[in-house]
Image (tube, chains in turn yellow, red):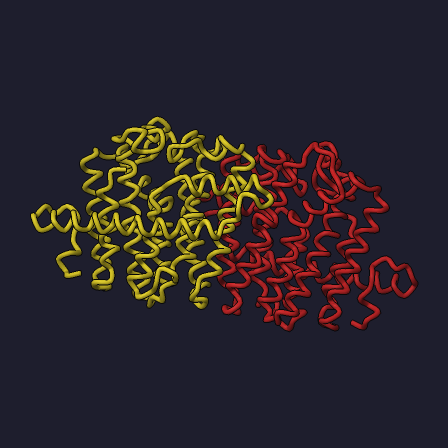
Length: 315
Length: 315
């Protein structure tokens, strides 16, 4: 990748538009191939549904194989490859990331939390399997994620990989973000609170995926730091676009009930600024993320393309 | 420890009675000192309650510091020491074990599960902090447990330690046992179902504690296998004694509502055999556990004493 490629997604010149189309195509191809790869590995790692306790394994598989873009696994693979690692090196981290993402959706949808009936276009886990089983399926997916991390081929990376992922989903990461989100419901949102919630609830896991993917691929500490920064910016941009799509999309495109955030009084970007400004903020963050990749040179091309995809996606 | 020490806890001879009193005193001293040690470390590892999100950190600390024997940490330390390791070597595993045990109590007590109001003599986590916060506090403790495992001093042991603990609390361990337990409620219990539930719900984590403690202490694969076997038998014996105490104890001694298992139609040992037979089964398992320690020689003395404590405790 030449320097010119790594720039903001909406600079608007003719060259950039061509770059953009090219990057989006690259991102889609990469997402597709890593989705196939990670789905095969998830199917291999997760216990079969005819194994006791069948109900639990069925609930876990129901939620894991409910569709989804598999963006996190793609970021893991791209990060591992950007530092010279292979897809195989990153596979356990990629599977763990998707198990953790799925566990968080299952628990967020519970009646005691966001009380959602629809997710990825299907009834939520607790609607199908009951509340107790949904809690346990989430617990089991979180646990399994760490078991799988213990199989990372580059064994010497395991301690740092485990710590990075756990930090990303802990009390000052995903779980902490969910707490802020719940506690903020119905209160007047400010830009500060919204970006704090998004940074923890969404960006922390995405940043951890990039960091852990890099570690699994044999990254230097400096490469790790840059990839984590890329992940943080891209994660924030991703969530802003999510907020925008929640306001502008159809239920079919979204796979869940749109407009729900606003009705629940959730702290979102469209609640604190107009849509055009929110989109500009997402673009700004994506441009910053791409800057963080410069140090990696041409090997970061896929990550740059995924960064562009994150802000330009329509669902 | 000579061969004579490592025998069944209820053989009844005068020598055994003296041994028994000696072992119980040793076990109590060891439990007390490891409780103090692990509580200090837990206080160090867990985020302070004045750190955002305060509510979450408060809920986690409320449940972790609610008392409890700290049996699992003691087993971790004793296993590490039995293979020549130090208490420091085992500290992250010991803290993780207690975080995981606490998370499982918080989630088991939820309205959607066993719907318990009282735990260790205090209102349960969801009674104090609400259901959403209790779910998230459990999630956070499980996550933190793995983060702490990533700090195990013998770094090369981390992959195996993480896998052992995750297996012990996964779908064919603690979580799987909770599923069988819930699904068995109100159905006629058989010895087979009861021992299957106990093996997964309780014994699997205790076995994993012994195995992971040994790994953290630098055990050989053979030592690990023996310690895991010891843990499995002691874990089963522990749960049988728990079932018995649920029938025979006062609420004060128990710290929770006694007789609840029977009222909920739970699968327990007293539901499938009389109390004397249940106690004899616990003794038999403890004797088997002590047999598994023979290969370790005198260094396993504390583990043998803890084994005796497990079946002779009164609360």
